Length: 124
Image (cartoon, rainbow, N blue to C red; front, side):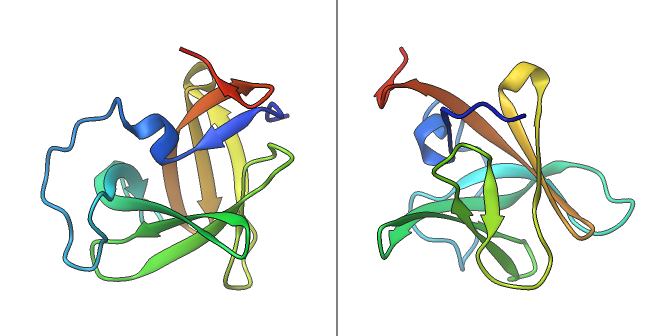
């Protein structure tokens, strides 16, 4: 089970490099993340991750290189990400010793950095 104190996206991305150009449709500050889009595809830093908030919910938007995107709601119970739009559910799995969250929706896969928190205070 995914640990309760899991946070995603920009909170942990400050340690990631910003190599590669920002896609035109991505917002300023978007960070590259590994994704594998479609059946049989390989992972690479092809997608861009944006974070935000809407109606008090933390959102993660992952933009695809073809202009498509997926939007997720960060689950407050620490269970991972839930699809904000669409009919397919997200499957969440911690990998790489808990440093990455792999999210699968249909045939698309995303690997996002994670960061643990204790009582709301970030670990150093």
